[in-house]
Amino acid sequence: KVVDGTVNVTVEGDKLVIKLKSTTVNAKFTCPTADFPIEVVNLGGGEGPEFEGTELSVLLSATSNVANGTNSVTINLAEEGISSTQDPTTWQTTWEGEGHYLALDVYSADGKLAPGTYTACATGGTIAEGEFGIGWDPGDLWGIGMVFENWGTCWWAVSGGAAVAEAKVLDGTLTVAVDGDTYTITLESSAVNARYVGGLTL
Image (tube, rainbow, N blue to C red):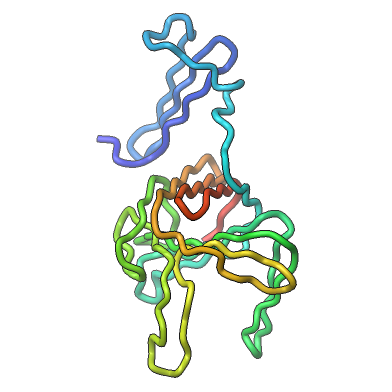
């Protein structure tokens, strides 16, 4: 049984190419489009339909939370030109650039980001297998007089050296595909559609 992985369908010239990549098996099927028993729609030179959303190209950070007792990874992905620096003494973060970044919390049992499709969790701060963590406000978690907000998966706007949360992601699907060292991470939700294509080190 194939229980993970990705299927990639492209049209290359007059050929239909279907590739399956999974932990169970990798397979490739090639057939002339004229001979395929189902009508083949032109996919635009094998590139597929154009993505309608925000393209992210910068990996700001990627951290495993497993060693701290939480089965998840936290990943921050930004538009081109966005960067940040943190003062090690004050913990204050200064942002550069203008645009957006996506903060993601995704389930992981081993500290890695596995390919597959993840759905929104039901309760903020509780992420089960096959889920990503919705945006939420933890409040004063430890009774220290400090109120925490906008944890989990949130969409942030960067401007004037600061970042402000524009939306908590509370629904939708997160799709992760891996081809060699390249990750394609796509979020589709009512709050934002965003896609990152690039490397990822955890």
